[in-house]
Length: 292
Image (cartoon, rainbow, N blue to C red; front, side, top):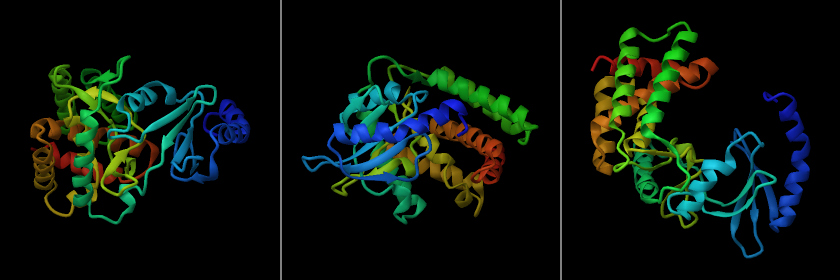
């Protein structure tokens, strides 16, 4: 509805589109899944017994761009497997995975451990042809977003936080090295990691897809569960989290720290703008981390 007329037009055609895809791919027991924000997800079973999900996105979403190319190149390594594509409907037929990691009742630490293990498979997947946003561009874009959004919101963060964000954005842009860059998920939080059908591990859905150092994906994990960090000394707790993530993956700790700071600040500003989630906690963490 936020898209106005084009959004309403897409919603009107969606039932017919879904009916065509269900028939075309022979989906039985179609069930609409909740939790999606930018696409319709419908689960079911193919004639050969495979559990699948049809993901239908509106035409202005980039479902058939980077996401499709990443899933095709990965071939099920680290990500849900891609079985078929319908370009007219802007739809993908995907492997159905199990329960989301954030719904298993695990402790934050156990979730972080599982995310690290799953990311190791993602980083080994081949980079798709056609190019992805790289680490330098991502750092510049994050830095610009922080500056512009903070200004638009009336500067809710202190100057030391913004100065540190500028420093870290410039540092990570300069540090980008294509020889050390990998395919990264780009938003590797626990709601995007689902259990594999055999229960042996986790795979990711909804890749944002970047060509960047592995530390970026760990920086996303750094921003999560800010309320846990605030239970004691957030700086000491943040450094301890960073050290654990780095040790588990063999990634440079300082790079993880700097991406984690940028992700905490930028996500906090976005949530403040939208008035959702725990942006106040993220701001408190950022202020503590800027004193390091």
